[in-house]
Amino acid sequence: MKTEINLGAIKRNFNLISKATEKPLILMCKADAYGHGAARVVREVSAAYYGVATEEEGIPLRELGKNVLVTAPSFYGVALCRRYGMIPLIGDMEVAKRAVACGVERCRIKVNSGMNRLGFTGDKECFAVARFLARNGVAVEGADTHYKDDSDLNLLRQNDRFKSAVVAVRSALAEEGRQGRFFTSVTECGATFAKEFDFLRVGLAAYGYHNASTAGIPLELAMKVYSEVIKVKTVKAGETLGYTGAFTAPKKLKAYTVLGGYGDGVARADAGRRVFAAGRRLCVAAVSMDTFEMISDHVDLSVGTRVIILSRTADAAYIAKHRGTIPYEVLLGFNVPRANRVYV
Image (cartoon, rainbow, N blue to C red):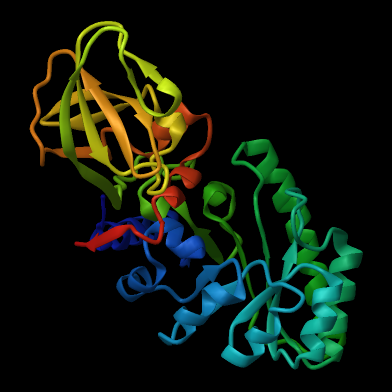
């Protein structure tokens, strides 16, 4: 299997979103840039900051000289932020204490405005942690929050909570005489209601998948996955394919074994969905670890024929709907150790 990544598409998407929202963007590169390869993506896309989830994810980007925000710093890992000059988004008091003990010099405060995942809730908590950090010599350079969805009512409610928390943080810093560089950021899906915030954090949209705020922007899908037929055979009515006879032929069919299985990102749940070969739609019948079976009663293919697994016609949103999941999980599934990644 081969995974083809169009770096130019990511760059164009990023620039189009920035222009449309009239905001500078923070490019989210967590989970290896959503399976697209963070080290290559950050070389192509010019952003003021790049976001990752963990300290370990951020180290390679810092070694490339990039400004890195760590959105989910851990109690033991936060020391790496000091060592490598990364900026943790602190959302827990114990992590804040650990950051001080490790000598972290700069950070941001994560505000829980309604997602209830990470972050400080309410003005009092935000004021207290900002004062604690400032008193212990840590430069608090801003505050950030994450929207739980992109409904108008929720965005407005979360914005109100976030704005109030930002006032509390700024007040604490002012009391401690630690007013300096400070900016706010929210997730880009709420761009319509985020005019007063400084930065937008853009994730999956940069890789070509729309949300409520990107309607009308001509985004390009950056990832394509394809493989090839490695075996052609005919199965008779009643014969089976795959482990435990996962598929039983209802009539005489052509069956094609394609390289790539659940060890490569083609899930067992993909049985029943369509893939493309020779410009035609064929059905996935059964999936093994290293291969999957594809069937047709009217398409003749040969060994070596290219099979399109992920493309604009059958993108991650389509696959996710078939699997009953979300596009993020589909894309990450193709980021496996034996992936043959090609950049264009």
